[in-house]
Amino acid sequence: MADTTVQMTGDLNNNESRTPVSTRMSFSSPRRGATVSFHNINYSVKMKSGFMCKRKVTQKNILIELNGVMKPGLNAILGPTGSGKSSFLDVLAARKDPAGLSGEVLIDGAPQPPNFKCLSGYVVQDDVVMGTLTVRENLRFSAALRLPKSICQQEKDEKIEKLIQELGLSKVADSRVTNQIHLHLTDYMCNQHKLNILKNQMANSGRTIILSIHQPRYSIYRLFDSLTLLLGGRLVYHGPAQDALDYFSEIGYICEPHNNPADFFLDVINGESTAVALNKLYDIEELDQEQLRSSLKGIEDRLVEEYKTSASNKQTKSELERIIQGKDYSKRPKSRTITYSTSFCHQFNWVLKRTFRDLMLNPQTSLVQIGVMIFLALVVGAIFFGVKDNMSGIQNRMGALFFITSNQCFSSMSSAELFITERKLFVHEYISGYYRVSVYFLSKVLSDILTLRTIPAIIFSCVVYWMIGLKASAEAFFIFLFSIILVSYTATSMTLAISADQTVVGIANIVINMIFVFMMIFSGLLVNLPSVADWLNWLKYLSIPRYGLVAVEINEFIGLTLCDMRNTSGLEMQVCTTGEEFLSEQGITYSTWGLWQNHLALGIMTLIFLIIAYLKLRFIKKFT
Image: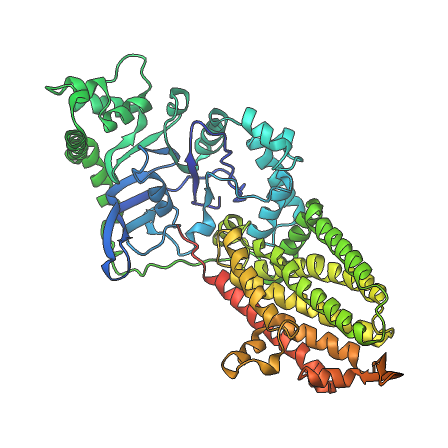
């Protein structure tokens, strides 16, 4: 972290082994950590129920009147499931949607800067690093984009090595995150080890660390400097962790010998503690569900009221008043800003290199695509091998060209997962100030187009074109190749435009598949387009395979003469037709403009779809 910073970690479950490693690069000399104070924090969400006109909108309070101070050290947020731990942590980290949020979070008495999430480290429970890269490579990527270019590469490498040593990752620094390191993290980097690192290496050196945790064992609990207990979004205790047992004892809840304090607190909150039962005139097991809910509500209200009148709360309020004395934050606009330490070109260079490296380390994606293309090319080439210059050749040529253009559309469906599979990684890195949306978008699109669209299309065309025996000229071949590649680009762009804001690949694929099927109907082979009713005929202008098919038809049939021997009145006669005549029958304009207008239409559609995809990526929800 830089100067005065807050390092935060995500929700840790004692049953899982997640490594809370912040990729925020900061290795300046130890300084005084930041004091985080939160003043009257309230957060609510709107809940919708019912259908159509009967839909009701209710407001659910997630956090209610939270006040407190968290100082340098290890600050833990504890509470049962649904108590608001994760929401509270997101509020403190400035990663919660401002809608429905009120109150103020101050850093050393000053408002959080608009780019606070770019200045603080935040680790979520799920892994959000590039799995195909090693630990060191992921840290190098973070350092390259989050540290200013004024720091030389040697100094950055030294900082990375120091961080690796601090986190105890030396043995797995050069292992990929998804293979060898996964076993290491499961067996070695247990929660105890993670918390020891946070406590000894970071908190004790002056950093302010705030974490949410569900049910820690005592060896972890004893590391906490401060404890915040939440119940139903309200405070039931906030203060030194070591004083929590004394506080609960004062209000009538005594922890049994050898009981884990964290378990005891949750038992009290859930109404399951022996101390709770002893304070009742009846056995809680004998209560029905309604009485049980009422009883638990009574316990909740009592715990909240006890804390409000406690000496600990009075001391906290006194400290909060001292922090905000003489200051007014009510008129400060709520804003969220992303700032960057590096330029567009620098970000583009690093993100593009990482994207290509990820593809190289996942060769099955590109190799399978190329393998399938070669197989299809051989099958299609064998079926239509050596097409003849007769009337049957028209049908064979049309069938082959239709299959080729349609295949380019359906093969592009693999790009539907381009932005979906990395959604969490993108959102985390973007809001943390790694790179701009445009950088990520261009890098992903370029890598996909070059490796998974251009190369397979070239290989497919080279095999199938000459096996079928289409027009044997270099000019015709390259026009055919250009048309096929452009169809692939347009179909890929449409796929990205549809899937950019989706979260489930399967749903995106269903929608895309349906659209391509309708486009095939209006491509010009399955139905004679001039015969289609006017009120439906306009749909042909939205058909990607139609533009591709028309382009390759014009390219193939112009200058072609197709002849057959026919028996007329007992005489064998040669009947010939030209490619131009066939194109006219199909309602196709075969002039030079008639050819290139299809490429122009595909180019315009590609541009429009890419703009839609970018805007969807730009405006997807990036706050929790």
